[in-house]
Length: 283
Image (cartoon, rainbow, N blue to C red; front, side, top):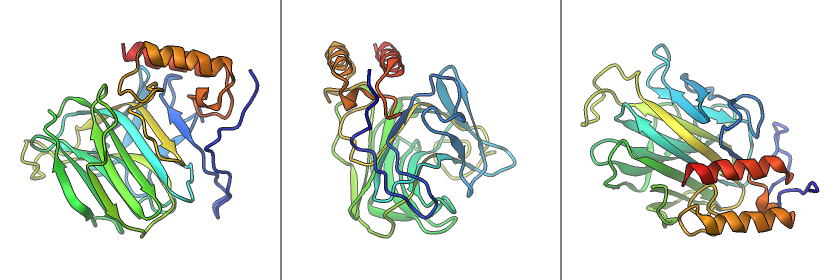
């Protein structure tokens, strides 16, 4: 198989000398810190902890660092991004989010959140400084999911329009539940964050706020809008099934850039085995 550049990868240089890089990290190599395909570090704004266990990224709290934990990648997108993660919330209630924020502080930017308070809701907000949440658009939408269900959360920031959507694996790719016109920030790096609200379903902040964690199956970022239902869903049907399996085989044999499921810029056996892992995990 020949090496092919990803068609959607931006190569514009930024002030920090980072490059925009489309990627999907499924943590199947057992590490979050070895650049395969991206290296995760903690946000400069928040403490917390993360590790890879059995092929999943575990984002957890650090009792000495406050109620927010946020790993991120130094993968700079200068003109907007889709940021997505498939995860399960544990020991809520809390916020379980993806974000697109500035490199320097990790605060100034946008957040799409699934809050497990009550019946669960999707939220869209902007951060301007530590502790400040500016809700955008309608603010939040009740989802009716039980807190222990696996879900996918996606944030889109393109051309002054910001949107959030949440759906469960196996559901079709949904329209945005929340959309706002906001051009305050146009560039940044992707991150995942969890905020532990403490014990109880009322989300009043009581309790130790140290035991929530997220089990992340995959995280993804793209310089063009993601419009399918999740990793492995090549035909955008809402599920990863035999149609996707045969579609991948055809793309792989043709050296098609869409077969680069690892996002490393080449099509090789890593893509083949990565796709098989996702197909097996969804069936």
